[in-house]
Image (cartoon, rainbow, N blue to C red; front, side, top):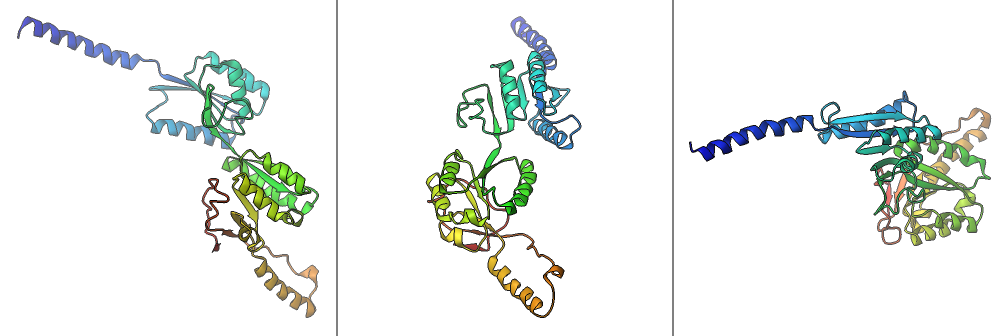
Amino acid sequence: MKRREFITLLGGAAVLPLAARAQQTARPARIGVLVSAVEDDPRGLEYVTAFAQGLAELGWTVGRNLRIEYRWGAGDLDRFRRYAAELVALSPDVVLASSGSIVGAFQQASRTVPIVFVTTVDPVGGGWVDSLSRPGTNAAGFAAYVVAVIRDPSVPAGSGGLAAIQTVAPSLGVELTPVGVRDAGEIERAITASNGGPILVGPTSSVQRYRDLIIALAARHRLPAIYPGGGRLYVTGGGLISYGPDPIDQYRRAAGYVDRILKGEKPADLPVRQRAGGQPQDRQGAGPRNSADVARPRRRGDRVM
């Protein structure tokens, strides 16, 4: 072997262990995580577990090439600010924020540390990003859907349904904004102010009498809207989709109750029946008039028009 080839081979052999050693001793990536829940909250633990699993699937393993610092804010704004400052002081490569208030706390602590947020309501309105398509700041991530629920607050019958929806919404990453309306002017202002978000129309008759106005406004502003059941009134009028019990079925079954009362039974002894689930109805070709993207319904409609 020539002397020059030997020196080249020896030099290469020396470089290989150095490169391997440098790779082994490289600083692990550091992530700061600030969650708004308390530390022993089962749902919060489920969230951070999903986050760690997602990182593992992408090749990031705690103890090998990754270190994660967790803080739990317990819904306390002072803790958000304190823990955000603590995590920023650790010089993380990126931080994860579980709410808009936490994004704000991180941005108060640093305008350079990258922030990824989740389940954050209206990040543009909060001032944390410039726009959804081009955030323009040190924050980006995943916003929660804000759904405007249009209802008449003077009608107590709808309060139970609203409470049920509010209970389920957080698990779906949805933020509900109840909008009380009593007349056409309030309805128009509410829909105009929805900022492109979905709307859910309550089933009270005081709202339904403005059916045509609501459908027209939703189409004009290109808003995905779900209307209450009540036969085909909303979808034949141009609405995107309605969901609820079939009133024709209930009228038919009401005849049976009338029959039983005529035969001597008392209303006090007759149970109030509830249909298990509703019937979705959608309008084929609703896209041109109401073309905002809408999640596919989990159940198929019984009528497509």
